[in-house]
Length: 208
Image (tube, rainbow, N blue to C red):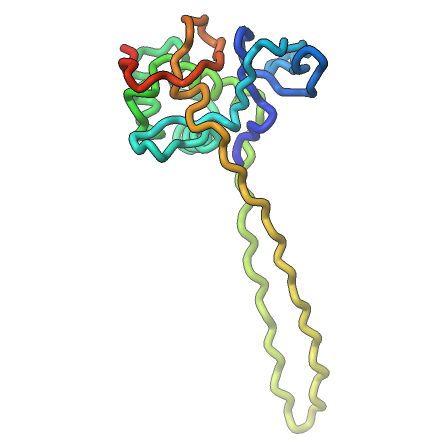
């Protein structure tokens, strides 16, 4: 996983992104993902949306793209610096998302969602180092025993060691098929303040 998103979340009513520290009696203790790393209590009434559980809708109703994969595609195409921000034009934002997810659902992914994506990527790439996937180890080469000559005594056979392959943990599937990306804000918010919202109804028109 290039960017570790497991402990990162967007919290309604609170700007920016946060790292979850631990559960508290009246909410969740969180730490802001910025230079100050300020710890505060997120009230229980505020909705917490884990970035690792957010996906983006595609034109296939049974297929979504997890945010971790979206971040990987952005990094491979643009590097750590996002080419757009929440203040970019509509054309720049839609072209940006189409460049990493060509078949994203234009009806269910709104302009405000793309702005959140650009804002979140900028925050994460600035404060979380990119972790390249570990390279696959080359298979060990086997040495062949030399054929003994008539004058030389046969060499003792070396005992072959059996290598036990380590089992890799299976990646957990995202719990949300839409999450925050692919849902409309309940009310307009300031730039850089991604908030979790409920998924939009199919009858809702695409945001201009």
